[in-house]
Amino acid sequence: MTNTDATSADIDTALKNLKAAYTGLKPSPTTKPDKSKLQAAYDKDKAVTNTDNKYTADSWKTFQTAVSAAQNVLANNDATQSDVDTALQKLNDAYNGLTPTNGEKADKKALQTAYDKDKAVTNTDNKYTADSWKTFQTALENAQNVLADNKAVQTDVDAALQKLNDAYDGLTVNPDTKPDKSALQTAVNAAQALSDAAVTGDHEGNYPADAVTTFKNAITAAKKVLTDASATKDDVTNAVSTLNQTVATFKKAAITVNRDPLTQLVKASQALKEADYTSDSWTTFQQAFSAAQKLLAGKPSQQELDAAVTALQAAKNNLATAGQLPSTGGRGSGSSSSSQAPSASSSAAPSSSSATDQTTPASESSSSSNKNKYPNTGESQLSLAVTVAALALLAGIGGLAWFLHEKGKMKQE
Image (cartoon, rainbow, N blue to C red; front, side, top):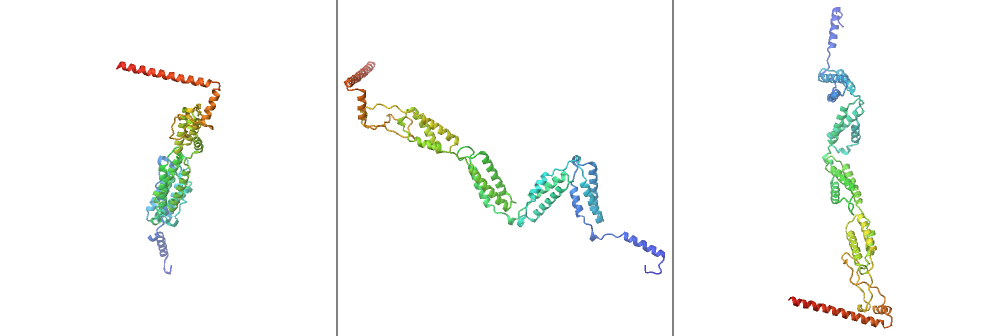
């Protein structure tokens, strides 16, 4: 350019050399293209399969071509940034263009449920290790992207769900931030002891079957938190609170009975006297009374208590009054039979003598009775004589019988 003596041939040669040098310019090794996005897309997409031909043949062929092209660009050390960007675009387009053969969209319900639950997890005070938290966050972000991708196929959804679940299970609590589980252990021990002692049934102090099942499930849930190495302080606190509430609810579920009707009937029946009633009716009553006392001393069911009230009341109503014997001078003035109230240890048989409830001396009663029975006409003396004669006759017959018996024995000897 500066040579005033240069010929046209010189100028043509210089131009040709300049164009060739310009065309031969190559990127410096220090300015290699960024392949990270292409690599990530390739790693994800190469795992996609076409099992059972779930994608149409055309969309699958286009996708496979894009995956191969991306692989070649990644392996080409001379690839420019333009080559990388073009390969990434084609790969994404091919992935989004995959068309299910049956035309159905991927089912994302399970992934959505897991994502909604896991996105609420926090790392307050760095309670989880950095690595486990980073893995979890990456999986959570991936799940969000798949959920937002209308072209996502079922394999993507399933893979995202698996990664999210694995990342959640892999969350590791920092050793220096592990919660104190002593209160939870104490609560579990107490609840387990209560559960072991609980009896399923309908008697007083028993528990309904559904209450026992609910209580055991609560204990199992608390034990799971107790053995969970990744459980947080909030997890432990909530477990203690929940278990304590369940214990209180379970205790309230214990079967209770109403003893009052039977208790009152037993007290009212204690004043009854055996001597006032016939032997048979008293025996039946005494059996019902003893059974009621035994029932009240134990832990009955409401049905048993109600039946005991019915039985005792019926036995009481059926008590038959014993017949009163006429008073005689031989019993003495003012004499009365012994009486006793019913008890669990009292005899079922009535007293040999009938109870009397007299307000006048026996001698007066006897005299009055005799006066009414034998008017003052001389009949009393005649009756007395007849009675004495009859007794003498009976004594003579008895003596004769004894004499004949002894005589017969002597003959046999």
